[in-house]
Image (cartoon, rainbow, N blue to C red):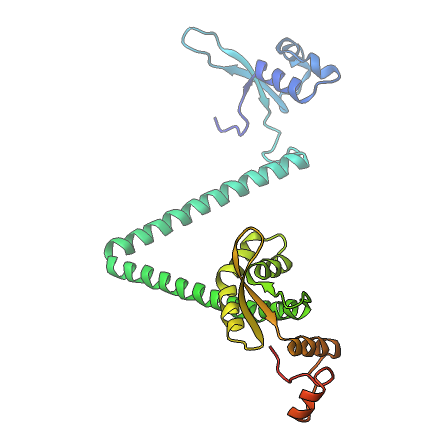
Length: 266
């Protein structure tokens, strides 16, 4: 019983040999062949013996490694070694993860059952902080987009040359939104819902922009915006020169509106 290597039945040994080696003479290995080779095998290397059978069965002839084979001395293929290492590592990680989950659950359950008011207060505080942070991010995004959208609106109004027919505000909103987010419906909708109302207030408060309603094709009454002629020319000039154009006096600005536009940035 102190022998480190157990015995295995001849049938199992022959079956395993056939599974591992499907070519050559090893595919003809059978229990009878192993018994026939018994006298030629050194008993110190390979040991034959008997395994007890069942209640109504005879003992089974078995084979195993002999006493001269030291435990751990047999060469193991590299792939088998890596598989053994991986299995041991996975087993260790699984046990460690289970231990962490169990320990964490026990600690959480202890705190919840013994300090319920503190737990409720902590959860409420965490939710409040999350809401505040979400609101801050929302406002920061709206402020960031507001300037960009407003500049795009003024650019389009200054480029609108249609004999004072104006630019439908609803169509202008869609044009700017599709230019900024051609493929993202979510971002475009965010701009429509939260940024555009602020842009609308800014445009309606700007006296340089003429606001009026007009019925368009289809019978829909839409608000239209139209940039003042001097403002259009001044913005185009500033865009072309890359900065502001200084005016010397109101009289010169009135007498020479094309070369000296009103100094005001939208």
